[in-house]
Image (cartoon, rainbow, N blue to C red):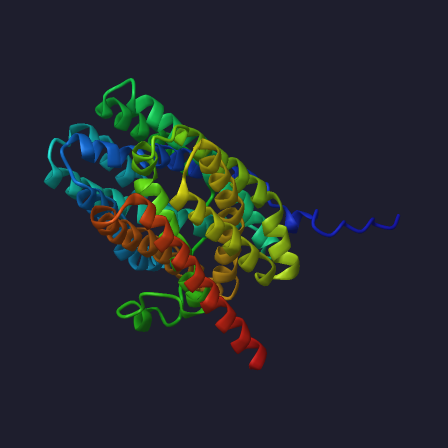
Length: 394
């Protein structure tokens, strides 16, 4: 009997939803849930301890810069020590540091703990993205990374709102212990994954000393940097901006953002696989730009939720497309370093945004933060057009 041909996209080799892919998605969901619950509540905690807007920026910035500095080492460790070691070590450090927030009673101690949290976050997120890359068929990488990103986005749908709600009814110490518990659940899932064996580079001894990024991932990573500057302004100062404007619904902002971000993930990855990044980047950037202008204006809750929806659609398409672009061009033994480069640019954008925006908020207003964010998006579009024209001329 003649064997029936397998339908393209549904063969075993092209299957995305495997046991291990489900486990990495569950692990990613729970660590992001714990993280997202702290995202809007850390600035409030800093204020409760007597910190200023500048200190809020420093506390957020020190976290992202710690993650940024550790990512190159994380990328190397993924290729030398293995995925399991890096991922579980990062998750363990994240759990311990978030739990330690419950006992932070001074700014100095909070800064130290945030540095440790940033290191754990740098290890775990770099490893998580690389493990997902290992498990996704190359021909469906854009689609698969979109699904993987959904696990973090679902956490985003509930995490900030849950964190803000709990912060209003329980002490911050209890809140942070709950966040740490979610990280521990992620650690349990990570222990069940069957990890890909590491293939060492024949040039390992030459690349370990000065190699701090993957050059094939630089272009999408630079673009991500300018986009995530805007993200830094939202994650750090939006709850304070809404309070100053007497606009309610900040919990709903994060819910709407996550819903529309998940919506974009259902089609943006497939569009990237079929058409390329040009069909994703410009429309996505336009949506983010308009969202920033709306947040700068922010007259009422309706505007807040419209901005959330537009930002979710735009960023939800941009992030997985840029990540797939960064990883696609890297050699097999450099996927970990490509992810490290990509996430480093994310951290750098959020960190620089938080520190700079802390100064802008102090000297001008919270609304000025989002005008500056819109300018950063314009810079990303200009760079992208330059890169595309360079390719066309080449």
